[in-house]
Each structure stands twice: as structure tokens, then as C-alpha cells.
Image 1 (cartoon, rainbow, N blue to C red):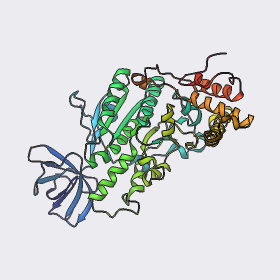
Image 2: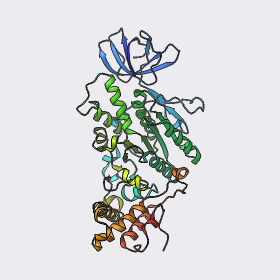
Image 3: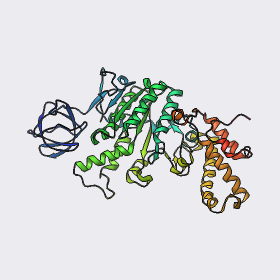
Image 4: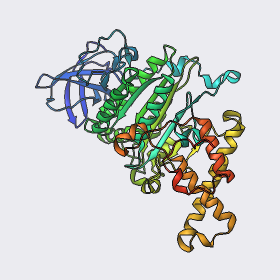
Length: 463
């Protein structure tokens, strides 16, 4: 409620208790502002009514310098950030404030980060029966387009442990889609290293993508409240662009850090953790976030999400909670990284709900299924070969084994965003050329070529 005055009674890291003298307290998610002893403003967001007169809040910026009994003022509204149309080419923090040293943002329209108008009021296109259309977004990345295609309005998860190339794969998807299809991109950096954000910014600047992109960062060195709310700020900005009838690409790196920040906040709030050690509200927090990424009539939000897997354990409760909201899951393999196969997608462990002949077409579906069968058989034979050698395989098994190795090498490709690190020029491969190349390898027409000829190539040369 606007105009209410309170005072700080306790501070627990990022959690601050504010006491009010009145019976009517600020609402959940309302913003309260306070000034520390250095004169800097600290923004607090109400998350609980802890006591008849106390609001328990999370701080969205550092709590250093806050004092007990400091006077706080309720603003009467949720956290407001500039709308997406005013932010193109800019980098902002969780509060919507610029952090790119390009001056202040001229705000004409402010939007609440916790606005849920779409879920309640708009009709989602997925319930529109006959009018439902699947529109493929070609990425030029062979393994994605062939086996895990990205469609407008879909949610794709890139799942893997540390150092497997999640961020570089997201960068390549952004680069290829925006370059070829002239889309709009909102990137939300949640709990990751600022070095990665810095590299992303300069990569966007170098390739000319920044003018059609918006970046929101709540980085690893910031408070748990800032890391948690950065995801909501990002999706709110994407919603504001979508509401104007535009299709939006929404990238988030990293959803696990969003869940982890929620766990830290939950512990500071004194909630009893679940049996697995995570917050009891894990599932509802993940669901609430993903339910905002929906398609409405005439516009869509297409999300690509990096998901860190602690200790490469795909059964981690936070990772499992995210799984159910994704249309496609790409599991990155440490074994592929050790072999130098990039992108390091493990085809056998990954899946896509769009693998249907009615969605992607009969030829594409059949080729994709055959590629998956070859790679599955290869995985089964690999252990046998490591023990007894390839020579002991039957003739049929040896042919499948060798073709599968060629397929693995063919599905690897150099990235535009990796040129600085590899020295190899990036390639964009159209879907038709990927399908044709896979068909040639599996048909036996290229059996005479050694497998290393297929490594880090783009399209197969014309015959």
C-alpha cells in the first residue's frame, strides 16, 4: 500500500524483516524501499506476512549498510521495469536499471515483473484446434534441425554439467536465428559468471545482433533475490514485446541457478527443506515461471534454456522438476566433449516431442529415426569393441558401427561463435542438406570414405 511507513527489525543476509504499525500490510510482491547509511537505495520485495505486523522481504540489491530501525516506504506496486520496446540494444539488471554505461533509459511505459495477465485473460494458441500451426525455426545446426527441431512457441532445454558447451550452443542458436530470420531476442542471465555475460555482449556487438536484443543480468556475485527475480524480469520484458504482436526468442542461462537461488531464499526464510534438500516450493516456482512462456494469438515466446546438471546427475530433483515443462531436451555428454564432438549432444539420452511425421514430414521423420537407431546400436556395440576389437563384429554390425561413427562426425560442426577459440570458420547448414547428408551416409554411398573426412564439416560436397 503506497505511503505506508515501516522500520527494519532484522536482517538475515538477503532477507529483511520490516515492521509496520498499521493492521493493513503491503501485499505479497509489493516493493518497499529503504536507504542505507551510505545514501544508496535498497529495494525489498515482500514475500511473506511473517507476523500480524511484519513483512518478510527479499533484497534485490546488496543489503550492506542497512541499519536496524531504518525507515522504509511501501511503494504500492510490484517491481516495475521498462517495457521491451524501450530496451533494444541495452543491458539491464533485475531492477530494469542500465548496467552498460550508455546512460539512463527514457522510460515511457513501465511493466510489472510479476504480471500474470496473459495466463488469465488471453486464449493460448495451443487450445485453438484446427488453427494450430507448427512453424519450424531453422537454426543451421545439423543435430538440432535433424533430431530436435525448434518450433515457434516451444521450450527447448540444453542440459549438461560444467564445461560441456551449453552457453556456446545458446550463443550459436541466437546468432543463427536472428541473423537469418531477423527475430527479437531477450536474454536473461541468471546466476552465471559475469565473464560469460561480458563475452556475450561483445559477441552481439561484433555481429550486429545487439540492436535487436535485450539483456537482463542477475549474476553469480549478486544476492539470491536478484538472481531469482532476474528470470521474472526477463520473461516480463519478453511478454511486453509479445503483447505488441511480435514473436520473441527468450533465452535463459541458467534455469538451475534460478532454482538454486530459490533454495537459498527458502533457507533464509526459515522454511523446512524437502527430503532432497531443496525448497518445498521448488515445483511451484519452476511451474510459475514456465507457465508465463506461452503462445497467444498471432505471437509467441520461444524459449531456449540452459540447465546446469550438478555432478552430471540427471536425476537431481531440480533438473527433474524442469524436465516436465520442456518440449525438447538436449542432453550434453562429457564423453562427446572428450572426443572433440561439438555440439556434444547425446542423441540417445535426448528427446523431442516434435518427432512426428505429421509435424516434421515423413522423409525427415524416417531419416531422424534411422539416425537415432544407428547411434543407439553404436552405443551398444562400443563397449564390445573396446573389449574384443572391431574385427570380431559380424559384417552387418561392423557396417552399422562404421556408419554411426561417420554420422557422429557429420553431426559435429564448427560454430560462428566459436571461431575465436577454434580458428575454424563457422558454417550454417540448411535442413535439406542435413537430411540429404545423413541419407547418403546411411545408404552406404560414402562407405569408401574414411570417417575423419566427415569431422567438423558443413554440408557434404556435391557429387
